[in-house]
Amino acid sequence: MKFQELGIIEPILRAIQDEGYEVPSPIQAEAIPILLTGRDLLGCAQTGTGKTAAFAIPILQSLYKQKPANTGKRKPKALILTPTRELALQISESFKAYGRYTGIKATVVFGGVSQIPQVAELSAGTDILVATPGRLNDLVNQRLCDLTGVSVLVLDEADRMLDMGFIHDVEKVIAKLPRERQTLLFSATIPKEIATLSSTILRNHATVTVTPVSSTVETIDQYVYFVDKANKGRLLIDLLGDETFVSTLIFSRTKHGADKIKRIMEAAGISVKAIHGNKSQNARQAALDEFKSGTIRALVATDIAARGIDIEQLSHVINFDLPNIPETYVHRIGRTGRAGLGGTAISFCDYDEMKFLEDIQKLIKMKPQVVEEHQYPMQVFEHIEPKTVPRPPRAERNMRAANTPVKSPVKKGTQSTANSRAKGRYNTGRH
Ligand code: AMP
Image 1 (tube, rainbow, N blue to C red):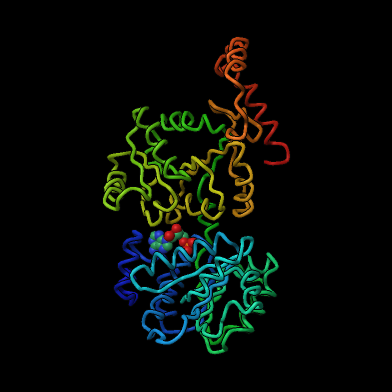
Image 2 (cartoon, protein in one colour):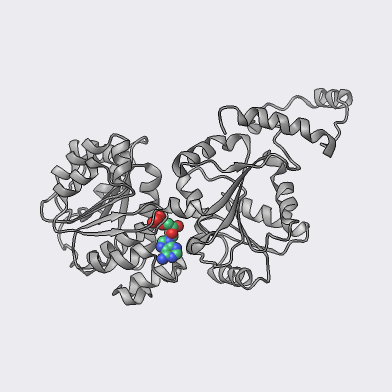
């Protein structure tokens, strides 16, 4: 199945190609043709299945085909409600990416920040509004957002909105929308309240169900190494000394980090390339081709650059940094273990990332196995803010240096002590 076969218009096809998507994901293949006919939809799907594009593409297409209003300000014609700020931002970025050749404008509003810039954007006019329910309700109550032009409503992650106590805000928003509209409801699970909600707001809807991401996650062997930030590079080199790491995708949170990891690996003689937003599309494609053909055995990528990477034979995914958005972890490790095949995902976790690990574990409802016997067990058990620690005057520094005995590096023999410290710290209560 190709995107062309789904009846998608050329400007959107071009944007999808820019994203590097080769084939539609199952939910896209099923949902896009249904949504293009204007039908309501109940989608049982989680983040990571490609559901954003499954609703964003048909929405963009139908707005593109509508004649633009020639008078007055553009009022939102499509509204997407989603539970968290992170998801709201991701969705609006997706609309911007898939709609980059359509001239259609997407705006995002969410709580926890000043409403002033959001109000300014709304009053400049928009076609698509992505919102968290609480903030949207506030804006509507202050008459700062006009929803009377909405002809498509998407409730994204409806079960999470329910869990987070947003359902009343959602109902209040729905009450302000025109009754004549297309409605889409996406939810990973369908508890009673969601079934009731869907029966009241959906009309003659189609249902599409795709395998939840977590079932993909279950086929992947997941490990965590607790390690200090400064030792992550050494640990990586150590692991890649093992020849079973045939094709390894390494994730870095930042572009700068990706380049740094690449340099460390090159210095150790490992064939590697890095891909991120600062590299041209051609350079990224060339790196990807070398990786796919096995010319290089490792690829370092940022999350954005890794979008759309589809490599069949990935042996390992390594999270050099843990992502702060738990869904990103699922996307990352889903790069291995494709099509139900097993794979191995390894995460490096330093002290500051422990909170991220907890969030991930909550989402995937399991705990990756902790690898305790390794060369660089964690030694730093507190948050270190290097920039806020004042530097002592030079004279004092010189004096301290003269008085400090030289520490010996961690030797193999001392490791059991270091390991047992790590164990004591992380195995009580946490794992
Ligand atoms: P979502 O479930 O919408 O959050 O999407 C999960 C990830 O899959 C995102 O990083 C998308 O950019 C990516 N993605 C969506 N559709 C495709 C596709 N057809 N091919 C490859 N990657 C995709």
